Length: 335
Image (cartoon, rainbow, N blue to C red; front, side, top):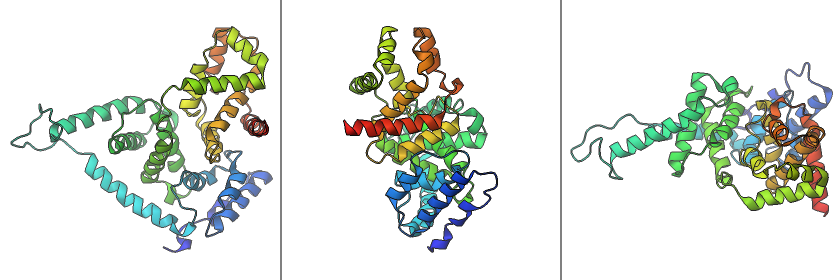
């Protein structure tokens, strides 16, 4: 495969209406991506504030790099895409099947673990379970039938290949990754297979994410008390259960409570945290609370809960939240 097979130059085309700062960011990232060996640290430094709508064209390549789907040697990118398209097509053929034919020692009522019919019915149950969530996942952005089918396949195949149970929340993760792929302006990056493999990589790192871990809830609460004890004490006095925030923010990684562009930008920031993702997540959550402090500090339990469960409706400056989170993270490293 030749380097020119993968188009980097189009990233800086059609910049009309884009601010000078964002044009410069696009060009700076493009310069890093032009190198045969991409500078990971340099890329992270540029991208750690996340991408706005004006710079979202960078997201597809950057996510693939930071997730480990693309190697940092650029000459292999086209090869990766082509190879994984073929692999994914084979996986679909092998694992998404119609009802098996009748066999002498096998039948639809069999419960033997090696029964084709038993395995078929288990697959049908898994598909149906996933489908119930898919039909109400990011309906505005992924409501088209073909997108729902893609999302269903990605989740089904991930669970089946990894022999894992489907858990609510996985649909939100897969939806963001699928949307990132299918909305990319580069047609070469608009494919289901990339979304599948990126999701598989993400799930490997988050396999324990769907369990409530009380020690992490406690660590988050302690950090809030350290940063803003008055807000912490008010929330405690109002009987706020911090595990609610843990489920909605830490388990789901802010994938559910925001407009999709904001969730994607938060994930930009999280993927830039090579070894400190959990630490940054705490700082980001506290930064959100500080952003909402004026209303939270005077609210009762019901009002507080209403605010925190409807973040998309709150007046939040996400750029300020992200900048504050980075500052908090730096301050904690000094302690």
